[in-house]
Image (cartoon, rainbow, N blue to C red; front, side):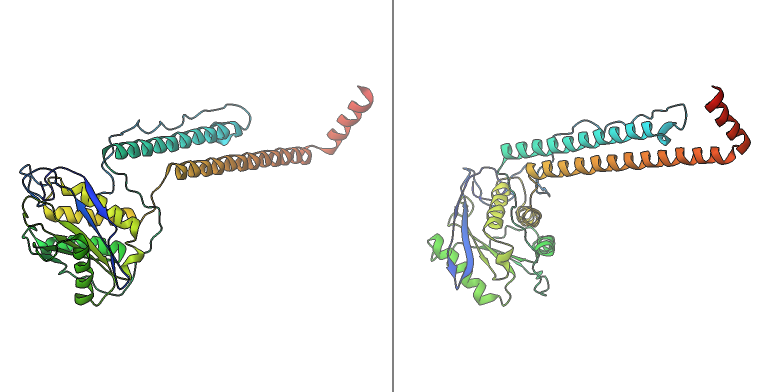
Length: 338
């Protein structure tokens, strides 16, 4: 099996060469033992997936119920108006938020475990900025000498999502078998020379698929050439992520169009956002807990201060509203007669 989208797996990736310091390299997806090399050759229908990770099977428990309201009947205490009720509400809120944070952490760990079990986990560890070269998007960015694409115009319009997120212009060439290109190094050099001879902008990521002589049964060699500006986004880590997506989609039921749409656009989703790790989740949970605890302490201090101020105001009002002769009489009676 050679054609992308027909089931199988495995790959060999080479570091590639350089031309005039232009970043380039190559990659090979091994044959899966089927009868076709072209993407989308399966008869089971088309396949399309859009997203950096598969849908999680973890549904988790439902949202915790809202905190129960407690009422305190008595002096200056009722429902949330009193200090006791407010403190219980704050503690309940803290517990609910911690439970939610734990659920999120466990859900993320589950997804990560499932992803590692089913296919290569793709994570971005580098902060990348979208490049801005002021160049318009090239709609005519696919050359298909093999006739594998169903609709190059539609595919090109969908690949614009990759350009919009990264600033990198995708360009795809499916090249027919050429007996003069016998080695991988020659194919990589052809890609870099094609870039130098045909493009006058440096924000292009050129992908070239070199078909084998038995085009329908053998998977060809894949090479890339980066523009000078492109290398700040499509660095070595991003290239490996891209190859990983090519591997993932090549032997599926996807049409050739969808293989490249998904590989490019999902690569952009991953490389332009640094992946969240378990340490990041724990760090933010600790920060959240600290913020909540500080908030509860502040609320408690304010409530206590307001309580003392209210008691002082009530005492002062009582003194002002008590007749002086009564107050004096009471004081003398308490002092001398009792």
